[in-house]
Amino acid sequence: MRLCTPVSVSLAAAAALLTAPMPRAHADPGPDPHGFPITTRIHGGPDTYVAGGGLGTWYLDLTNTTARTRTDIHPVVVLVDDKNALEPSQARLEFYDGERPHPVGLEATDANELVGAFDDGFPGFTVAPGRTLTVKIRLGITSDAVPNDITAAAAVVQRHTDDGDWVGQSNDYRFGIDAGPDRTPAPGTSDTPLPFADELARTGLGTPGVAMAATVVVLLVTGGAILLARRRR
Image 1 (cartoon, rainbow, N blue to C red):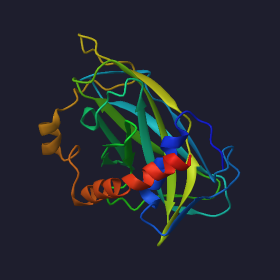
Image 2: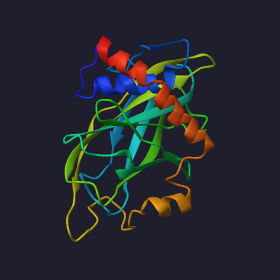
Image 3: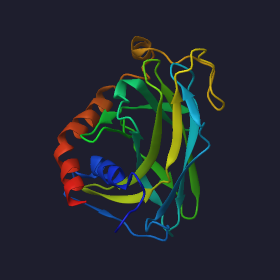
């Protein structure tokens, strides 16, 4: 399957993040325009984030276009910045399962992308046939981030017992980082200042637990698989 979005190679690497440790993984064709069974769309996010400002909220729609229920669905977000300057510690990402927030640990790849799986022990989303599930996501940028332009996108993986399918690919979400001196929150962001790393550790939202630590291990182990995917591409 040939993909043509600007971050398609990154999305392939993101899919490998969750599927590489398994014996096999493949794209699961379906009626989505990209050939996937789950139509995936990012929407609702602010155009600009103020470094050190509030958290911006955006949404990920997962639409099951097939006639069977899709379970164990895990999105993987990829952030690509134009200056190759954004560090994992400078972005706080979390998703919601109902009212419950889950932290997303971000790791840098060899090509300066940040990749984060929705997999902190979370069992995955379930999407009924013909239905759309909307996932709330929040993102904040720390005060030490430089002005920049970012592209966010998501790959969607359906896990099975011993393998996994790449079942969705989102559109690109473009936004900027503004280091404005007044620190006024941009439209679409909250007015709650982004905590620093030690504050995040106390809240538990920014520091991975045992399950998230396992995800970090997966990221490190699959580094070779990600590189191989790029070379094949």
